[in-house]
Length: 381
Length: 160
Image (cartoon, rainbow over all chains, first blue to last red; front, side, top):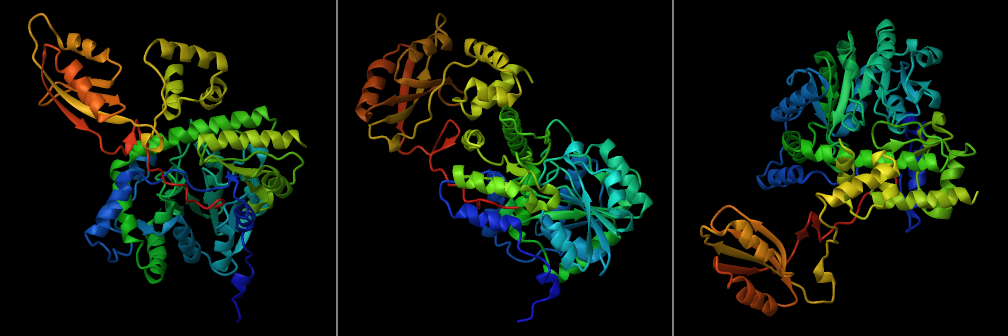
């Protein structure tokens, strides 16, 4: 069988390999999970059940149910000061992953460069490759708390790119970007005519800091596609529901692919999402408070254990530096000797080397036990 | 948020957190946590108890809710009656409620007979109480916010 070159050129993810190592043991405490440990709020689950009971099992409009698009527009207006038209400027997708894939295919021609800050969530680079584009890696650094800087964009030659992928709050680092941090990045995008693909799936999960969307900066709305969804804040990963917001011509282009490839996002999930927006704000607040308690706990424990870790203020990840600097060796030894799984930073690209992605989307009891094991592990070395 | 509120939020999640962990979770130092605990325990926090699924313990444990009708006179208030009822160890919770009757009690004991006897001998004779209705719990699904039929974490151990 001849497989397409774009597939052959993309290897299996480093996460996959580590998953297999972790699955081989049964005493593992995992800090390697990139999804909430909560279940979706019950009203949202109930809405999904009711939708099935009432027989809502057909396709919806390509762009998603009108009521859901209305609710999404109201939500992002209220929370992030983003104003979009429900008929022209929204498409509901099967998770943000689909939306990112649509955007890369809609805006990237073969040979176009797409700037991707590093370390990076694992789907962006393969997405660029599958769209025929070339990845332009832009480094972020521990010294900047893993924020993207204008200098890094220039140094990487991102001025030649057609698009810039942003992901703040960030997976894997937990970094956030304030308005002041975003301004020079926005100026760079305007000066060099870059489209910004802003994955804001963790927007609701910020601590002591309100999320700012780059699309709200002057001159940015017309060149930005914002991605968000229900997986993280509403703990609905398995329901696969996200959305993209952007200018009409951008959404129309993405919808042209979406209508042929997916037709419409899962109907049951759309009903759950509508209910989530309607009645689950308090549940989200409670989850965010729980994450914040764990975040503070974890960062304090790292400090006590002498691990260098910047103050991650978003998502549910901390990104400590590992002693010795070899993240894969460290992660494998930690798993082998103490049964604690955390993803080596280089699974998110070479810029992640020397770090460990530690997820605190896990209960306090497990966090306590995991950090106690980590303490023993470090003492043994 | 005051120190007490921050500590209380953690304790509502799990009352067994130790002072050092409470300090790490709240960002307070241990002395501030200890002081907040002292103030909480001198005030709003009346006690700590485990939430027990009695079906998993080899010991008889019966729970009943008891409705009580009360007729007050000029000298007696709801509080007076409540104080008398609350003193009994068998009464686990006691609330004055709106609606068709006045007090709702949760009574716990080792057998249905024990509870029946308690209601007949101790509750019904209180002069202001004009009637009682006892409902025995047949199954407990959730108590103090904890579901007894807990689902396992079915997430994959490492995901992107």
